[in-house]
Image 1 (tube, rainbow, N blue to C red):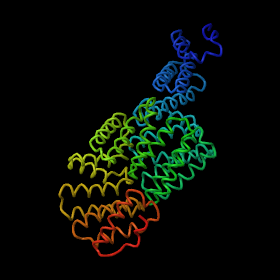
Image 2: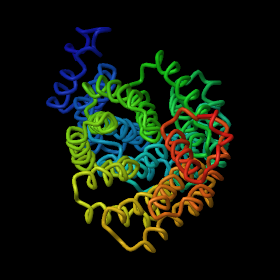
Image 3: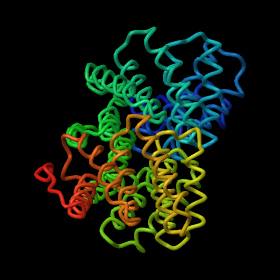
Length: 460
């Protein structure tokens, strides 16, 4: 038509107008082409809500067309594009996002398009993990890895190993998680972290969380610093924000207020255009305030974060932060509500990686509830044993420190010292972290009571 010819090479710049023009003129195939182009251009500008609208219009036009050549392949590309946009315009675990990827999976299976199935499986994995369905997400990660392995391309392989590592971290299989995360980072570096390989940016912060959990705080922090350097020259806001999500969780575990503030500020800049991240901005800012003694302000931020994440379906993110919300409730005197949440976390089969900490927090809450000594001791014993079974030395140290502090209050200082000294003595690094400082200080107090001088005091 004359309108299209008149724009020449600039037709893409007015794709939205041309799409609507051809739609009204009932020239469906050209309307479809320009709605798709308008969606792509909206993504390039970071206008995700507009992109969502354009892709939905394209799918509506496609549905009105008679059977055309490669129709299913075209719908597959549109559904994947829509799902990717919905990560930001709604959330990666929103029902609409899941619906787009489920339809894409049906199409990919019908086309027997294994290479095109990989981004579909990525979307399904993110939807499941974002919704807190970690067992389901692990099964999808296994399928994604098998599909990537059959192709042998380093970019999908790197992405698949990265998310397999995340899934194993959430299953508390830390050694296996490390193997996949190291492979994920290695394959993605081969592809310079472009395209699907960009998801390899998440491998280092995830690996840092694993290293910390296994008892290597210095190595974890070193990896986190390297991650920040890598991110400084990456432009994809979704992947950079996801990286700061894991760095923020690492800082939460370390009780590092400076790291929390840095993650909160970085995500705040991204959330100006992609508001799906704003709940985490509030959470990390609130956690930093609590660590700095501003408990009331921090609790308010945590509540805002919880409300937001629940509203967009980010229950998987909330599961990682659940115990911080429990402790915030306890600070506000809501001990019964806190005990209920902690008890739910202990028995939740989706989150075994949080079980040692949930058991420890349960013991703390039982003290505040003036429970019987036998119940408190049972909870702390369970926390230490669970962490040992998982090989989670950092969680074992935290549990042993809280248990030893309670034993000291029960005039059982010798038992406390023996318990804590064994765990603390295992560590060879990270003595300036909050958890190890707390343990060292308590051991000094217990040694004074015992009338002994600690030979390990120089490591504090």
